[in-house]
Amino acid sequence: MMRKIGIAFAAAALVATALTAQTVHDEIAFTRAQIAADRQTVVAATLKLNEAQAKDFWPIYREYRGEVAKPLDRLWNLFETYGKTWDAMSDADAAKLLDEYFAIEKDIVQIKQKYAKTMTARIGAANTARFFQIDNKLDSIVRAEAASGIPLLTKAK
Image 1 (cartoon, rainbow, N blue to C red):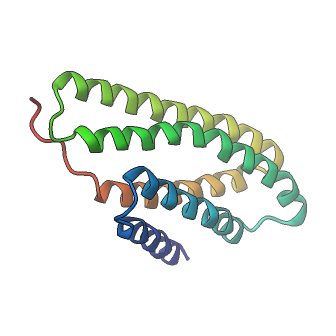
Image 2: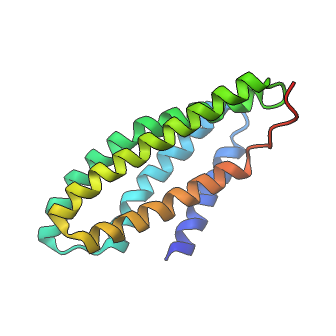
């Protein structure tokens, strides 16, 4: 199942890259929208909650995705900034970018910890752990696709 998901996300990323008439921002927005649409379907198919658990889980899930989208927006903006400056970045610019990256990662972890507590109270620890495994796998696929298109920083100027 996860292999099929990876292929679907990879295809979405390839489609986004093929849209040469659009800006990088538009390509990223398209890919993120496609992934968001597929994500809930994947979570539903792999989490396998009973009806009562699902009734409790999905509102929390939508709230979680809404909240985690904010630092993810910052992360994608950071990728765009990096994409525009990677070949002419100073040490000071690189340090600033790195600090922002770590701040975003910290925010994402805090959001996940907050929602893990809420989910555990509603659907149990095992289901919550399973959800975050699924969520992490999906995030890893997205990040791997993004990373494949991001060049390494050239020597600082």
